[in-house]
Image (tube, rainbow, N blue to C red; front, side, top):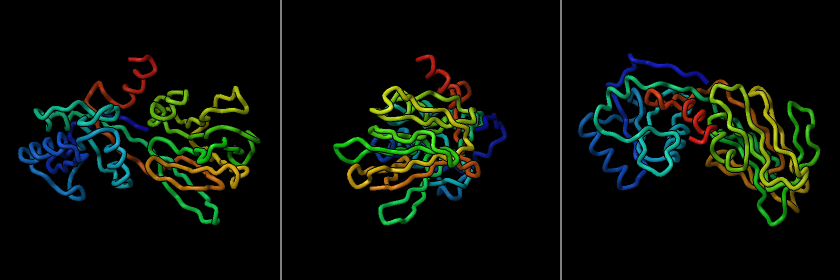
Length: 263
């Protein structure tokens, strides 16, 4: 992750995207009438109006393009978004601080032996899909670190995603610039006191499903779900950078730091 201020950022061509709610649609119409509107592919940057779900969808949609995304909250939580205001938008865009984050690559092997690849900005998670707890074996860089985890599931979170599902299951909050990933169990039954691990973001986490027929497991990378997996490998995609823009004093790393102090 890197963060910087870019006062000379081009803001001549703006694409406005809506989450589809009446509030977001109306805001897009007003802003487009004032500033013009371009197709995202031709725009210098994207202004997304909605909540965190829209931000994640937008980042996935333009993954690999390095196109900056500035979000304004027309949703509920809006952790990834800036405050909504129509006045002074161009000045805000020019003064915004950029944060570059990297997604995870999740490679999942299904029951038929086929491998699928997905990317996750927040976390890659494995979740039981029946009434019985999942049984999993966890390896890091090819070495078995936990021969058997009995739990509702387990997840690997990025620093940017450490305040999302990871935090909800009592995982650690990671500073945005930390070269780490959080490996966090979900309702662990055995080992009962295992709280997870902090791993370097160069590690490859491999999770093998034990008793997959009796205890089926689904794998989820943000919004992509793979059912009945047999094995999942998770690593950080350092080659892909996603650029988020935030108002000065409200950068993503500042928000994550505040979250650690409950503010």
